[in-house]
Image (cartoon, rainbow, N blue to C red; front, top):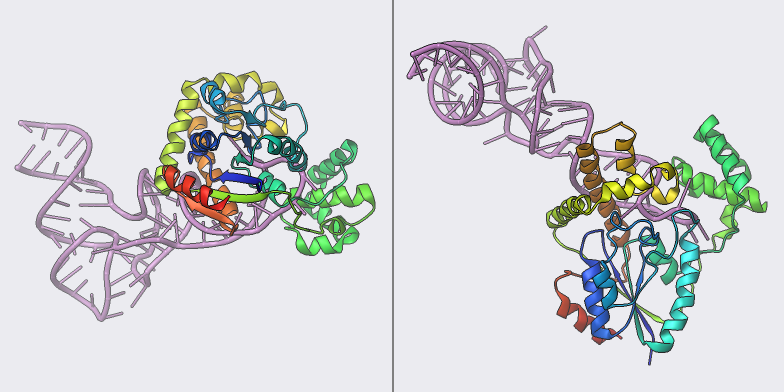
Length: 299
RNA sequence: GGUGCCAUAGCUCAGUUGGUAGAGCAACGGACUGAAAAUCCGUGUGUCCUUGGUUCGAUUCCGAGUGGCACCA
């Protein structure tokens, strides 16, 4: 029988967790989380990981399997998930992947080009150059070293330019030459299920969930990592706002308000990302039977 | 009941010496191949409370009404 990866995606707070557990039980299978922040074992409350009770109902992977002190990225996720899928498909014909990190989902479904890992010193030097001399100096350097990327890249986005420069300098070959963009073939069928609901309703759910996180101890969770606040893994909605509060820059209620707003903005960005993927079939998350029927008809 | 002040974007407010209006926040749209809950780009969304008057022209000036606030009764 054909192997299928059932991808359940949608913006934060839409209801992916509950639905994916229901579907996993229906299909008697396991769940891979495609969430770039639930990966970190230290971040529980603020990333809305499934409860222990939920984790007991269905086997979950990639939740809390790295530390915030580890370096992690979409490419590593791609290969780790593919390895795990190979194992899981010995037991199951369908596996569920649920989460809202578009780039991680794409890495698994389509693959991303292989790039060399970047020397830490080089990365720091380039970052320092950016901080000292500004983005214009990066642009000039990129134009010289990799004119093709210079044409394609968003030249106002420092991260994009830094990435291109890192790779170009590290390898001596232009970053653009690495981006061959083949859609990698996967030995399994992919079925993408997108969840959507009324915008106002989604925003109310997000606001409410933030209040619940605060009640559950989010402030204390964040305070524990205040000294590590510079880590990329903690550049995360729900934590960065509280760090501002701990630094005395904003009040607690202001921080909570900002967490709600930034979560809404994040949800919007996720929707922008998913909207252009024509392979997604869209459903309301409470329309469980319809989704199950759809899956049964397409595996 | 009387007097005064106010009424402009979702909110708080600015402004137009009369030529249909703008700021902050919120909101909205988008990009995105190794930091992606990151990073970056773009967009004013408006019966200027209603209604008469003056005027070529009123959101702006005048009158009345309605609503809100304050004070006096």
